[in-house]
Every structure is written in C-alpha cells, then in structure tokens.
Image (cartoon, rainbow, N blue to C red; front, side):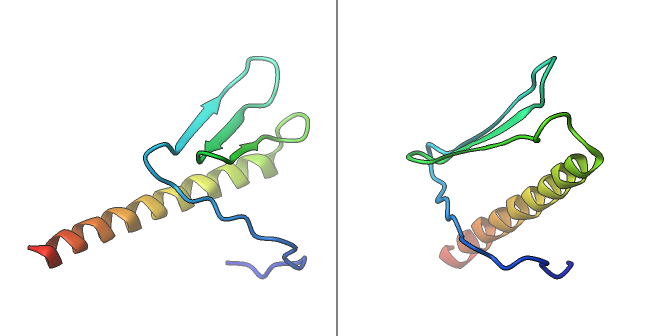
Length: 85
C-alpha cells in the first residue's frame, strides 16, 4: 500500500444490507458507470472523459479490494456459525 499524497478531507460510510446493490452500466459510446446503491445513498463511479490506463488500474484495485471484502465477510459468516454451533 502506498502512502497517501493528499490529506483525507472526508469519509463516507455506506452501510450495506438486504437492499444494497452494485451494478455496472456499460455504454457503447461513453465511459461505463459503476453504481453502488445502499438504500438512501447512491454512489456513481465513472471516468472523467475517455477511460485511461489510470482508470483501468483503479478499477482493478477496486475489484481486488471487493474480492478481499467478500472473502472477509464470508470468513466472518462461517466463523460466527461455528461459534453458534
């Protein structure tokens, strides 16, 4: 992990639940949009203009982090079930 170059200005916490959704909206003639819908809050991610190599690098980082997040949730669910048994 690299050190942050700019100071953090704000943090947004999105709490997931049954209604949370993540969807990708590809378009043939403009940048795709990733939508994170967490009930009362929706976050849209897209590139500013034509996608670049930096946008692709960020998308891959996001995908890798989302995979690690899913594995951590899965591990937590399984460990909670084992404790309850």
